[in-house]
Image (cartoon, rainbow, N blue to C red; front, top):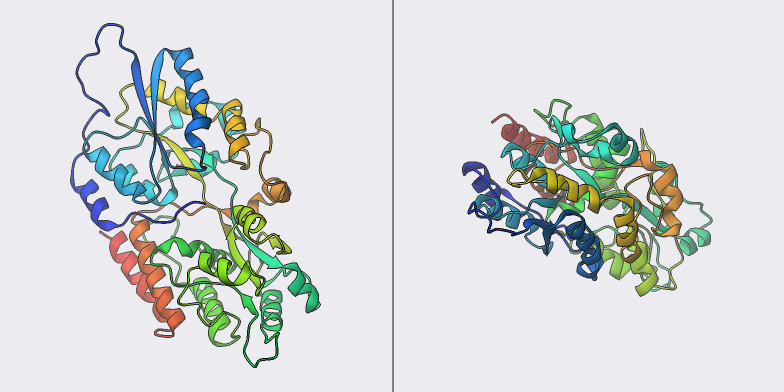
Length: 424
């Protein structure tokens, strides 16, 4: 599963204050007969990525008389490595980026706009091509998608309390309250409504603890012009007040909710069968299968309040501006994302297809969701200073859940900080 350790201001200030060097590699002329070399940077999706990519890239090398060097970059400090390498003129020709990385690299002109390189058939075939559109251009082609945060529920708990899977916030609260109880008669609550953790030191937990509630309340993070935020409007306030009520009014969160991350809550509470609900990536189902085989679970893609919505990352392949042979590098991108290549890759790393001509090889339990509920899940809107804004918002929401500030105070302070950044 994707590691949510993220970039922050120090390295990104450096990248914006220094000029990008031209060229990924040395400018010295090639020796006679020397092959063109392309460098690809990817994070590890599975344990056998290098073995799976080898024949895919080998085929491209043979067809294009070139060498392709694949480097798998650990998730820890992933974006910092990009920033430092590009500043030193040592970055890749083709890279992999997630949404929060894009603003700084686009502003620094480190990524190519792909609009002029795409053909009408590309827009028809690539399922997530619109998610590559950001900040006035099209800066990526999706390579990883359709793994949303879903509301997992414990079927046995719901059956025991006589409830069906929830559809609305009202259903959700009612079931959470009925599920929260002392099951062994010792006078202490040992079964909870929602296994939710608030202890994460990085903003990745906004994916589970904030975005879905904000969108379901009808809210958004940024205004359309990306010059200010709107998460502190009446919709955002409704979402924040709802979250706080789960802890302080309805008392449906575990007592150590502020001491554990959501992942730790899955391991210690939901997985062992002691909570009605948790929200995590759909791919967490494989963790349940392996570590909690007796867990009888189901899922709801999104609850509904004023709207529906839940977080799903759409990570992209990018054409780096420093690539010397951009035509060849873009051709490599298309080869990696072809139905043939992705079919092979997804045999070892089951995921939903990223193009119409690729067969489905993901978890069969989520196939209907992927094809029929796409409107329910969405990636983040890419906006300037996203990393700093999300970090500060997460800290303010944590203070709210600690009871130190009101929902309005938390959101207004986060918005003040965000709007100051956006005004610069």
